[in-house]
Length: 333
Image (cartoon, rainbow, N blue to C red; front, side, top):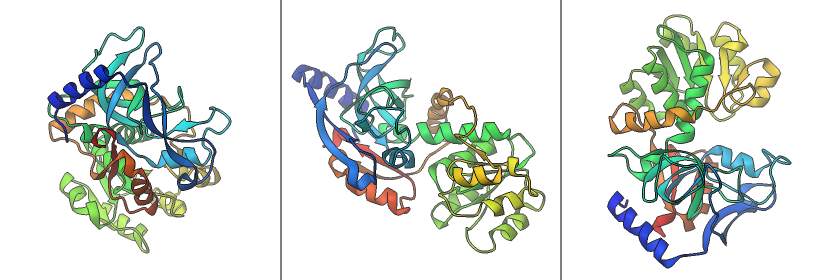
């Protein structure tokens, strides 16, 4: 991974060559990601008011990217659209009214996927939310943070998790679940986590009680907790266990919040991460970037890929066997 000094030099070289086009991954029609996504050459966008443009050093992929390809936001936003919401990079242009960063600053944050036809999986990206990279945080670690932190923090906050409660995080091996366990523990909660073997030991080392998925999960969770479970955050891929999660909280659907199974939430009265009026919590990402540097927080990164290898990353993500964050590295090509 390039260090910051090298990255700044690259930005100056990029500006000297004055490129007018860039590579970006986007879709022109809705459908399965493998069918509709393509790597294209497009004009480099200019940042509007309150926006910045960065030379992308790392872009984190998320399940929501594939959901968008299949039609999430269909009719609300024009096509083509880009993918890749989590971005870290180096500022190379600032829009009107931006005063907190200057050209050459290293930042992390969220790509403005709603404001243009490209997003973070590109050589360059327009950002609408950003923080300076704290010293000691590299671009790959930075690009793993934004959506996992925002979604997990908002879920834990919406549930009202507080000190002394017992919380189940179902799907703690996902990046959102892994983040949620840490955030709940920071709040002083007792945490039971369901996870596979990949991260079970790490979760236990953090202080969570961990059990596996599958038959007998309800009984194992209750036995581990030794007392009633107050709240459940469901961060697992859709698995048909929502009724079990409701049973774990004594049959009270409103004590369960899901970030994935919105259909079951609507049917059973469970709270949904995107089904209520929520304020996105990107405001906390800067704090968690510093926590990462301080060794108090982490999001596991599974693999990194040059931008040209995006199809390999897509296949791994859709296989359900990523076991951590998948990161594209446009600058590595």
